[in-house]
Length: 562
Image 1 (cartoon, rainbow, N blue to C red):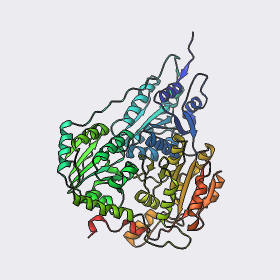
Image 2 (spheres, rainbow, N blue to C red; image 1 turned 90 degrees about the horizontal axis):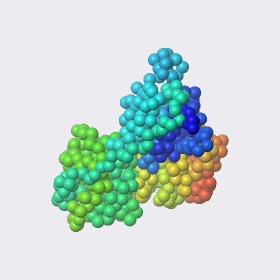
Image 3 (cartoon, rainbow, N blue to C red; image 1 turned 60 degrees about the vertical axis):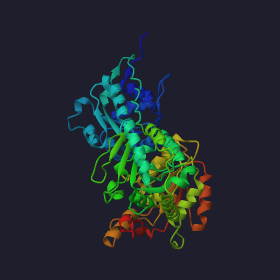
């Protein structure tokens, strides 16, 4: 029997299937169109990941990143040659910097044209090399499967990140024997706990410390690590500070005794104060890009021990006394036995009670907003009352993200998504789309400023087409890039380049086929959100906010406190 002939595109799809890819995001083009054809029109007996076409490649990459962060599985994005792959750079840079495994497949001109000045010819593998962990151009169709396998392994191991595969058009189109199969998914290396001697040493250091504090970053927020952390904290109540990207690692039942806020921007939070007072900081899956050590260890006088899956990048303010490298969950499990019976002194419990009171006071508005406008904390509180613990909330960069990161409580890991490595504007809607795709059983929520929302808002139409259950909250400050505005005003006494053209948020939403709502006065805030959360499909809510006191967000830094 003669086996049906295959093409390079078939091997590519088989490789995606073998690695458990559920969704492929992208924008098509001539250099990669056979792959899109194979994804959308599998022959009888073939299967393909679900293909989702977006209105912009940058949005496709950000949705893929959201899928990766939420599920822990690689997100996959495909774009054509030249400007198509060029538009992926923001999403790939963000994913790589922030530790999210994303695979990008880029179309390329045929091999014979690689070094000619021809239509859409660009050295894309070289372009992506500095912003990914793995960037390769396929030169032979027989190497497709192994290159895909290595891309997945590289993206998923060590500090997770992005991988880019450039595939020339004639490789995608190449005819291959029907009996050629893509390699199966290989088993990833499994790590055991860190050195038992180092774990015993750390247990002794904690036992002798007056105020040990755990600082949890994004790599410490995977499901198994959080489960082990909860078991340890249920036995031994240690204070925990989250980075913005580590948000949600503390559950409701542990919140009162162990949660002491988040750090990530401006050194004036309870978490910053607590770390400054600690005599032993234990970082758990922390990456310096989440919040530079020169901020939380400004005086370079803290004792630091790092628990991680990869060696730390050493700098002048982050030189851990010891590094415990291995499975974080396994290491925490061993550490739990070493510190059984440890308890903070009454004096330190009193110190923590003061910090807890400060943390709770930070949720209370300190000024009366202007007529018709909403206090940012009132907007956060109203949203908190509508969001259940299983809902995923994605937050855009801007002044809204400062308020949300400080005041919004999340009780499951990776259910409050923020970009604090690259601070990439426009992530909220694409990440909410990722949440709705991967968790269709519940609402997904995005929170943006009016600036960030329109960075990626064209794909609201895609969310409508897919009937995704998304509530998009848009904080409107009368059309400014306010996070830049108030910092410029703090530095120069005035702002520059921050006023943007107005767009009617509600009419825009309606033009896309979504429901558009506006909070006309603060007393409508709850009722409008009631309507939004009762709506099936995408809905956009505009909330006018009073940012007149935002300069205070950057005031009273820890080293200036009396």
